[in-house]
Amino acid sequence: MPVKIRLARRGRRKMAMYDVVVADARAPRDGRFIEKIGTYNPNTDPASININNERALQWLLNGAQPTDTVKAMLSYRGVMLKKHLQIGVVKGAITQEQADAKFEAWLKEKESKIQSKVDSIGKAKDEARQKALEAEAAKNQARLDAIKAREEEAKAAAEAAAAAEAPAEESAEESAPEASAEGDEAPQA
Image: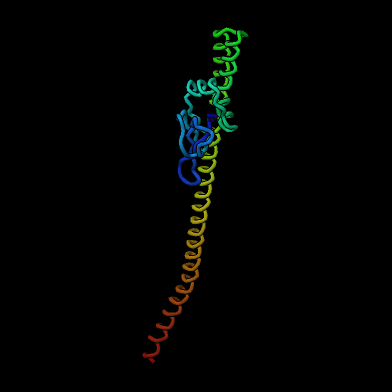
């Protein structure tokens, strides 16, 4: 019975998640499987890969064949390197302590790379958020300036209209006493 380590799809439409399963090669993609050894979520950034490394290594050493995608994920997690080192220990090329030391050094380097990527992504998101806030503040300030300018224009127009009416009222008041003075003189005659 040929055994494969492959992905089984689950999740909703356009938001797929995958289970990493050990299954008979003849079984359907989402059908029967022997063991579930992890999950893979490509929707996060960076993609989250949760695999039981010991079980995956055990299945690889027993002859299970990973698909291309799962092989890439196992390489990313260091399972393929551990298998390579374990074969070297079995053949007598290196000791178990040397293999463990090499794997630990690789693991520390890989974790630092992953952490730096996560930090850079977080920093980029913060910068984008800050730029958006600054752009929004500038837009709000421009809007407030435009409103203030309209209010000042309206105020200036009102003052101009009031100033234009004031001389007209003064001239009307001046002409009104003259007319009343003429009216007062007329009855005496």
